[in-house]
Length: 271
Image 1 (cartoon, rainbow, N blue to C red):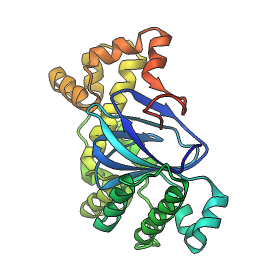
Image 2 (image 1 turned 135 degrees about the vertical axis):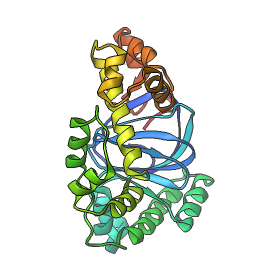
Image 3 (image 1 turned 180 degrees about the vertical axis):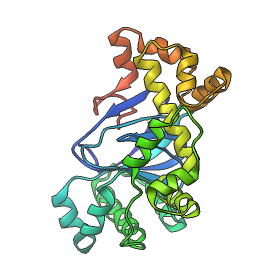
């Protein structure tokens, strides 16, 4: 692992990997599509995503995006650098999630993005300030558990071909529909139905890449009765048509390896 704080640019090329340290990715401009352990979200300005240590994650930005990335050095660094804040940081970094930044946190992120973060002292102190600021927000609801994503995802996957209601998801989570909506906004940065749509599209992407099913059949399996509407949704989400996604998946191994970066030392899209 290199510097604790780095500025990174992302494009439509997908990055898919995991690493043994936790990571925070803060949006500066553009929109970065992000999936951590099957949970889809989008990183934009005034938001960030948590990638726990060892979590498999995939990201890409069809329109291009710029982010500030905090690579957390490890347990010893947390304890030594954050002292009384260390436990709150462990809780923050323990689960994948997407969160919004408040105005003060956003100003801090933008200030660091404009600073020479390749300076080890600035990177070190900036990382400590960022984590301490985020910990204050994380402690505002100390007893509240995260939404039951495994159960929600299983329900979405089982019923992807059929209409889904927020009330069904709320019942699984044991919450009212209004409370579920609020929790999704806080934890994922999207509404429940936006989350459902993203998961369906990622399911479709996997079927396009890994199966020989007709495109119309895949559209039906993820809840689209119109193949043209499905194609438009895929193009908007991933920057490519369903047919092109399938063609790229069927390309030679060398071509596919060039499309998905797994080596953290490769190119400007290192993540």
